[in-house]
Image (cartoon, rainbow, N blue to C red; front, side):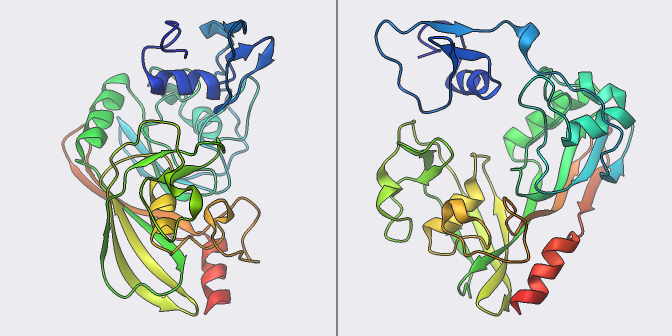
Amino acid sequence: MLVRLGFARSRRAARELVESGRVRVNGRRWRKGGTVAPGDAVEVAPDSETPAIAPAADADIAILYEDPDLLIVAKPAPMACYPLRPGDGGTVMNGIAARYPETAAAGPKPAEGGLIHRLDNGTSGALMIARKRSAYAAMRAALTSGAIARRYHALVAGTIDRPLRIAQPIAHHAKNPRRMVAVGAAPHAGPAANAYRSHPRPALTAVAPLRKIGGFTLIEAAPATGVRHQIRVHLASVGHPIAGDELYGGPHLQSLAPGRFWLHLAELGLTAPGGAFVRVSAPYPADLESALSASA
């Protein structure tokens, strides 16, 4: 609807307007998945109301790699990557901007700064942040083309004893704006697997088992695409939801905080803007190590 009215250049841009809190319908802040009726008054706030990054020096975020163009940091969970509303703090970008002020202006979006990609709040691990506009453009292009290797580790329900290739398209859930669905995934994904409202996007995830731990399997997941919630949705669609990921049917883990699930971006392999090949590993944080011990 925002695209048709000329407020946004694409569906993705329209979604970002809604997520940033800039869209109001009949005077109320709008949320994804809402239905607009004929005669409703749609307002989009100007860019001046877009949340900006306020430096916050109290964030404790480890630096895994640093060069003049690029940072790779260890994102904690359940910390958000960037502020969604004016005045928000306590995000990765708030903390990094306090130590590296140039990152706040390294990308085209004031709220995200030089954030090259995102991790869900409940996911931890290696996160790339540009320090220059040129580095942001180069790394975004590399990410889009598949030139950056991402290796996630996840603790999933049940037994996976062989490599899997999951290629179901992913779309927004028809009724729940928080969820995505694997289109055509059955029977494991449940009755809502074919109920979706957005155009399905192609998605491909390669999965390899690492070791069996009690009633779970520790796996490596390598996404070839970057669809929202991709790894979480794909694993749930084949009957192996991530431990702690209750949104997608994952079993509860007492040792993980609310909103946290056992998913971690453990390794990145990339060519940095300066030309050097970089391979960065992110150690498991203490809460994931404890969950492994408790699950054994």
